[in-house]
Amino acid sequence: MNLSNSYAELPVHFYARVKADPAPNPSLLAWNEALARHLGLEELTQDRERLTRLFSGNEPLPGGVTIAIAYAGHQFGNFVPQLGDGRAALIAEAISPVDGRTYDIQLKGSGQTPFSRNGDGKSPLGPVIREYLVSEAMHRLGVPTTRSLAAVASGGIVMRDRVHPGGVLTRVATSHLRVGTFQFFAARNDRDALQRLADYAMARHYPDAVAADRPLLAFFSAVVAAQAKLVAHWMALGFIHGVMNTDNTAISGETLDYGPCAFMDEFHIDKVFSSIDERGRYAYGQQAHMAQWNLARLAECLMLLDGTTDEYEALLAAFQADFETRYFALMSRKLGFSEPADEHKALVTAWLQRLQDNQLDYTQSFRQLASRLNADGPPLFGDFEARWLQQIDSQPGGRQEAARIMATSNPLFIPRNHQVERAIMAAYEDDLSVFNELQQVLSAPFQEHSGLTQYAEPPRENERVLATFCGT
Ligand code: AMP
Ligand code: MG
Image (cartoon, rainbow, N blue to C red; front, side):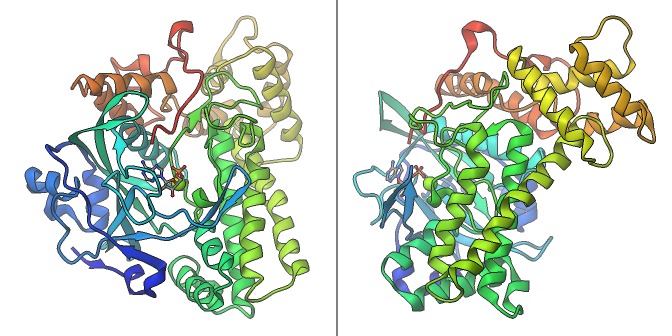
């Protein structure tokens, strides 16, 4: 293991030293061996009992310094000057022997910290299982994301709407720096701290910015591009984050915080699942706009150090075009085109309109469309189908090439809400079979898994999940 504690070496008001609460009777539900290898932690894999102690918070990781990080944030548009890790603790950073990068290792649900406000610092097991499944699926689907190293049932109970079993998730991120981390110091007009934080963020994420003429502007521009790329991926997958507050907007451009997130079943541009998103601020179709709003909040922080409103506005304006280019590139591939072209845009629009008008399943429809490449008989998708086939036939490689592209850009398996709910309900009864089967299909989401095809199916009417909860 090659551990570091670079964040704990920053000034003391950046964080608080904490101790994880012991879990009364922990059991290890999942250990991500592949990720452990990436982090240089594979030596731990041998000893399950020790793993259980380490990733329940019962034994500190040797060489790690446990801290809770301070941050602020706009929650649903309202600024809260102090949030911070209220139910999470960074236990160490691992330097990967594979890519040389530094990764945060964080326990979520390991007890109170000075930032807990009125919260208990705990997590029910449900959100632990949900985050483990969805974050790992996102990684396999090619989306930048925090990862999950371990899931533990604490053996204790957590009170929410009712009594839940408790859990601890081990989250891995290239860092937990958020827009809200910058806002924390900006709100205190602490320029020294802001500069320290910016220097730290640039060194860790965007080293090229350090050497630029105007480092902070280059840094901002890199964060804008990372967010544009991230949200383009979400949109192409039918993913709704659900709580895009500035404290959940990672500087790295990774998907951060799997609370009330959801994958859409049937397509609708205004889809909202999150029970706390009453006004649809973070509806599916709002996500690019909200990411840009969050980036504007970052610009306000950086402007305290360098740059004019005009300069930041110009960089921020690039977001929309960058997002659209990336989104249409992904959508073109989903429709089977090797290179994006302007004439695909109308096709994408017509396709989505068709899905929406007919309440068709977003994920499954792309696979069904692909099956039309070598099918006879009446069209499945009306007039759209002939129009689309005509454009496919005019590209080099024709239908064969389209079939290949579509099979690798359109997943068969996504973590569908009703299956994630089933996995949670079963785990509450000590049955991990659904959790394990879901992990299996989601570890290779573009291929068939014999005997597990049910996980590719949309929900039946009685299985539909209408709302998701952060449940924290
Ligand atoms: P979230 O909505 O999950 O991004 O969390 C927003 C803020 O609430 C963060 O500062 C969290 O640390 C804090 N928080 C959420 N749940 C709890 C909890 N059970 N105990 C303490 N703090 C919490
Ligand atoms: Mg959060």
